[in-house]
Image 1 (tube, one colour):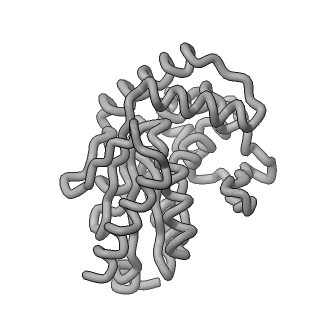
Image 2 (image 1 turned 135 degrees about the vertical axis):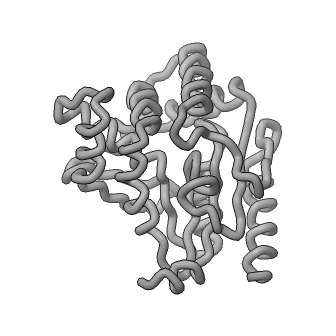
Length: 232
């Protein structure tokens, strides 16, 4: 695909902190519009998990970047709103959602060489008719020319509650106070990292989902998406 063809493919970026609801929102918007979906956070989680499995020190930037460049991720929609995730042939759907893996992913995401290794992989998800990209720097770094950028936020307490509910529904045990501490620690780590800190793009639309149902947030974003896409 040529660069000119790339720029003609619409991208909707949905960024925000862990537990803000961006993953659910991205899946719903992609399904409604018939677009492809990129869960960039899963790529960092997969990199962290692959590094740990290979016995790589997460502070060894070059070694972790090599892991990112050589791992073989695969995503498989399950048809019930979830996505099955594979790493080097193993189903790691549940494993990569563990809080420890999330913290490791945040550490890995702070390494500039790792981010560079994953940049081409992320941009490779761009294909017709369009892409919904979910992450923390999709609008600010990966797809800076995207016609629509959403930055979804919610209070730490609400995000911890949502995460607790989500884990319980998946049959995974979780402690609410511990989840809140992990979310607050990860927010600080993501916001203060030198490489692509988690901040809204200058032209992003910030939506606070703390007191909004996911249906209302989806409705708002779809309305803006159709408006922007028609203007392109």
